[in-house]
Length: 396
Image 1 (cartoon, rainbow, N blue to C red):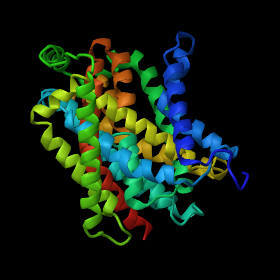
Image 2 (image 1 turned 120 degrees about the horizontal axis):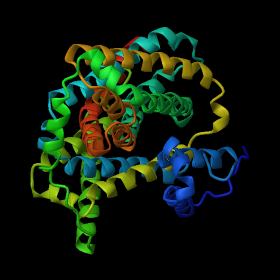
Image 3 (image 1 turned 90 degrees about the vertical axis):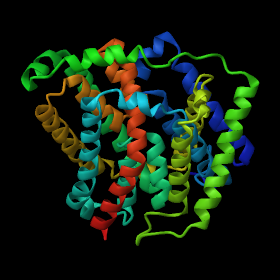
Image 4 (image 1 turned 30 degrees about the vertical axis):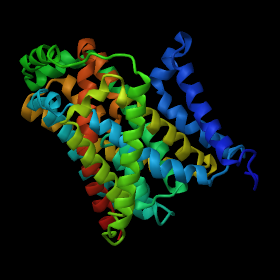
């Protein structure tokens, strides 16, 4: 890669990343490309295209633009995602849905330290554990949690890059297998003796949920953006003022900031501010999150992922533990394959994939996938930090 990138001016760099994100999501709306973006969702392209630009010398691997994006766009995204959560609706999903989602989380939390205990000694990067800790965030809730843990443990873009390959190859490979297994859900449900009345009850409960939306007005957007950035700045300042905990550091200033903004957001979700979801507050949150992802991708170099095959093998081992615990839980609690698949993707794929998988199994219940993914975000932000701590203990 050239020593000097083609585009280095901060505003121009930010504009390029925003344009890349816009182009990717526009292309995803075109009918001829529908299959391509089903296999590889827009969020993946939003990460890899900037990475390719940096590899080719178009964008720099380090910039003040990336630092600003990491510092403020993550809490903005988390605040908006949490403030719009309907916790009572998630609880109304029923115990089987939540049990399977939690079983998937337990599989990732247990699998992380076990995987690093088996494979950790083979990695040349002494900070490889930080990459695995970050991946635990992605596999317990999605991209927002990956970024949160990455910032907490201080994983560099180079350390994270091969784990992003694992996230894509293993995570989306498992998604493909789940889609394939949808043809066998009747046989699976018969094998575990699944109680299908759970599915029928959820169908009824979905009709009770408030899903009406309205176009966003200028006051709506002003309130959404203003609140989000205010929460981001307050959480960052409070986080920086609190002491770091752990050796190696697990609870850093960034971690405190994330925990503070998530907790505030959840608390405010019980107030009238949750009505900001009607004009689309969570969509603004996802926009901030995906824009942040372009900045993370731009800090990585594809030439640094030469060790990816070993990482991928470790990822397969890790996801196998997750799958084993899910199937065991399904047998014990007589859970339909629908909940196994959706609970798994609520963890490993997050909000981008869980509704897709849920829709493949039972099209009318695609919203359940989204709600389970939101539950994954809430649980995952805490469980991922615990998993990162366990991995750090193995790495010591």
